[in-house]
Length: 195
Ligand SMILES: CC(C)(COP(=O)(O)OP(=O)(O)OC[C@H]1O[C@@H](n2cnc3c(N)ncnc32)[C@H](O)[C@@H]1OP(=O)(O)O)[C@@H](O)C(=O)NCCC(=O)NCCS
Image 1 (cartoon, protein in one colour):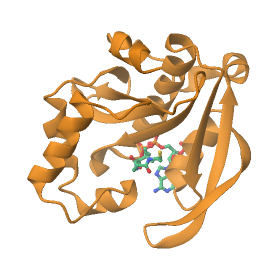
Image 2 (tube, rainbow, N blue to C red):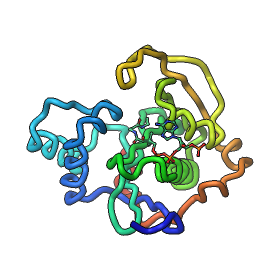
Image 3 (cartoon, rainbow, N blue to C red):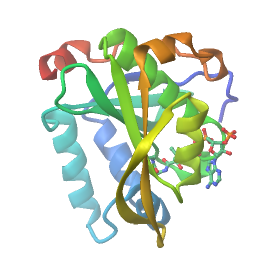
């Protein structure tokens, strides 16, 4: 594993990524934290991921997060509003958690959303018990906008905290903390077709 001087880069997903992503589902602890099904056969996870890569749901822009030559997670910019999307992010192997990858991937997604997609606002929500996600959003300058539904995170009931960040706030902020990495040829054409 390389050090964090290796930057996270975002790219469009390719079919071979489906196997990597499906493999993350072999870890039930990861599944519980990420809200993935724990009762699916490996083949079902693979089929699910292949479908997401080949035929993503309308409004979903999902980019692979690549680090040190491998796919380590993904970020989502999701929604049907023309210039506003919901941010999601995930690091697929728990052994990689706590090393700054989640924050860097989320930061890169903001760069993609505001610069490449020309969004006006990105919003996100996190269950309050999901400390990593909450810290990432607050650390990236998101402001609190209220609460959403209630749910459980790893068995802890709680409410979704909602956040938003405008393009202006993002541009004015200190983005150097995570660096907005170079993008490696994300599939911009397909994404534009979806917006
Ligand atoms: C949330 C997630 C992306 C965090 O990834 P990560 O690579 O561990 O994140 P980072 O290493 O960048 O950590 C970011 C911050 O959260 C903190 N953090 C991470 N996990 C934590 C935990 N379990 N408890 C407390 N703090 C935690 C880190 O210390 C760091 O804090 P800092 O900003 O003060 O340094 C990862 O745990 C994950 O993929 N979870 C499943 C999917 C998910 O919940 N996604 C978010 C909702 S969209």
